[in-house]
Length: 94
Image (cartoon, rainbow, N blue to C red; front, side):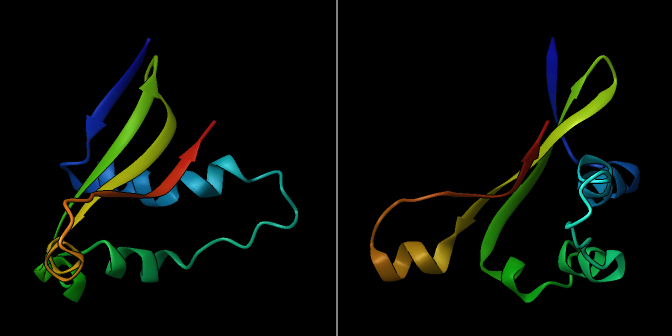
């Protein structure tokens, strides 16, 4: 059974950031993201987070990481477009 957990710890965030490295490790065309840049992107210092609600999730099956996804509510988009919309990003799965 697949379990979906919200990223709450540094370890979870590290798993979230590094998941593509594992997922695409056998793909010779895969260009991995810079880990330091990804840490900065997902940190509380990211200016986007001032006007957005973001939650990170991991999917695990029998303790093994199977996927990741981010849910995003961008308040500026909602105000500008006058529509209640949410977005997903950084989706990767086995």
